[in-house]
Image (cartoon, rainbow, N blue to C red):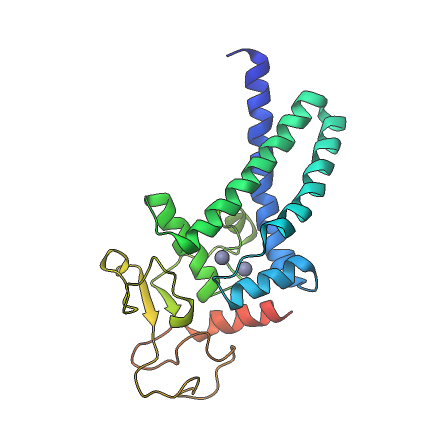
Length: 228
Ligand SMILES: [Zn+2]
Ligand SMILES: [Zn+2]
């Protein structure tokens, strides 16, 4: 490989790495901290209904100016070829993120990375939304102190991913070591807490009964951060 090709590939890799920081900060900042924006509203909806994803045209409309501005700024700062390689790396990594995130919800894992990514992301969804803002990598969560190692993932019945459960709503055996579905027991009235009122939105998680549940403190902390 020529020196120019290696240099171009290096800038594309740097662009992809820059995306992982953008992925983390957009999710943490606009998705959870300052939610009064289009991204925040769509993301709140994704948390409330995990089967919901913002339409592709909205994503393209938001991503295009960012990629074009990045390409222009990087071309000015680094020169046309490295600048365009950087912007292309960032754009490709963004598209890869969109595919990987959606597939985490719609398709089961195929290997160790897929298994890791799903548990990391579903810990964010169902246990502690103030942690694990990175989806494709844990790097920036580790850097900024928001990394949480997932334990058993307790998925509220209404959010159960199609790949996780069989036709009767039971966790498929191949995922039973890492996931539990919190189901309402027959005859149990909906959304009635067993103990004192919980500090999180009712219905998100099953009440803490003999099925157990996630510890309250991180959930409460996450909710309060989410509400800010
Ligand atoms: Zn998600
Ligand atoms: Zn989130």
